[in-house]
Image (cartoon, rainbow, N blue to C red; front, side):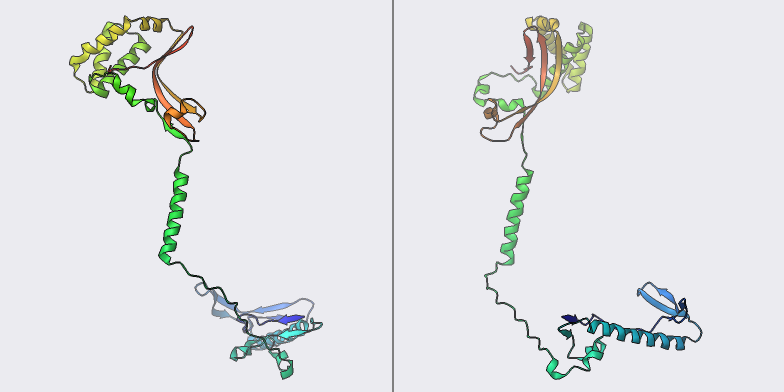
Amino acid sequence: MVFLAISYNSTTHEPTYYIERTGQEPYGHFLVYRSNTYNKGKGKRLAQPKNWEDYCQLEASYNEAEGIRLLYVAATRAKNLLVISSLNHKSNKSNPWLPLLKNIREEMNITVPEAGLPKAEVKEKESLLDGYKKIQKECGQWIKDLSKSSYYEKKPTDFKDEEKHQKIATVDVGGTAWGSAVHRIFDYLIKEDPDEQLLSLHAGKALEKQGISPKRKEELVGIIRKFKKSDLYQRLKKAELKYSEVSFTIKIEPEHPLYTELTGQDSRPIILSGTIDLVFKEAVGWVVIDYKTDR
């Protein structure tokens, strides 16, 4: 079975060249056109071979004969059935199979039934607004799930038990600014072990940096002097290693005892980050010190 379909937008154009095919080698005659990039086609004709009208008729005759040869080849490929496409309106004039149709008798026509569309089940359609709200809700949940962190970020201060913390008496000695000044001078003491003159000078700079009155310098230096007389300071001087203002980050898994104190019940790990004020190593192990300036 062979189907000869009608090609889309089939048109016949005037030849733009003529090929002499009688000799041993073909010889061509061509038209020359100006390029027309705007219309993506041929522009104005600039030159043509001498006696072009004769060449044009010869090439057109060759093309017509070639078309008949192709028509013969197409029609004779069928073994049992040859189906030739045809139209019922004037466009059929450009049908490339028109020469074959001239010999078709009425009884040879095949009636093509109209294709009926299957009856689709009528479903109640959602309104456009309802559909939009549904998609919006789904997208919102999707974004929420993606933005959810795979871990918790916590600080040591999150361990505070407020009931226990409130039982410890505190003293307002200057807030965080005073605490920062004390931390700064302690850090300087641990790292440099300065004499009294340098300690006093550095205490003044620490107060100035925090915007605290220089009148409190003697108070700040007094704290350091008191600390230097303590047993803890003597242990610190004998320590194998000592570090101040040490940043740390540790991972706490759900099975760790501290986990429930920070988050309760969950499955995500905790990333605990903070800064150790002072840590030093003795023969029996490490000692961790946390400065408190409001006690």
